[in-house]
Image (tube, rainbow, N blue to C red):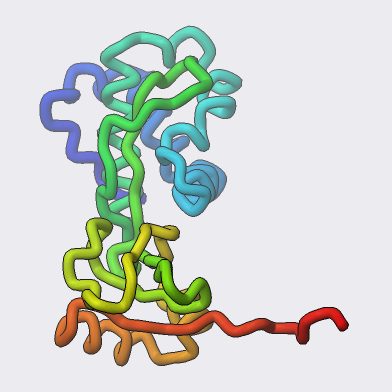
Amino acid sequence: MLEYKAGVYASVYATGLGQDLWVFLNEPDGVLMMTTATALGRPAVEGIEEALLARFGQGILDFRVKQMCGHMARQVMEAQGYRVSVQNTKIANGAPFVRGTKYQRRDEVMMHSFRNSRDSRLFALTADKNGSGLPEGQGSWSYYQPVKGALRISVLTMAKVGAVIAAIEKDGYFPYRLERITRPAV
């Protein structure tokens, strides 16, 4: 098990609850719940809310304990190969957490897809959401959706992700077409 670097939470961590919380977050189930929430695009601590309430009851509702739990979750997630993606994300459940941090894999590739106004099957991937590198004179481009993960990018574009990244670095975008998978009805 990792050694917790308590920092400003040393006094809270010194309690029995603090020690037990660290053990819980490092258990395979705790790690699995946090990584599953992350894979679903949610803050890591959202995945452990029910289990925390069931295991620690009212003790987890203390503001300083919740802060320390987030601090601990970050150390666990970073040890699992994740990095901070978005902080201070609203959590709808309301208890015990109101806000949390989203994580992403350190090696995760994230791109943004844009659709062309002249040709509805023509798309382009960019590294940024504003699409500043998209070609002009081919119609306008509207944001379509984010694309996360090297495998999804490769399947979507039918190109190796390295080639896609190289084209984006060179030209600012990577064009691709989405053809019909089935033939039209007759």
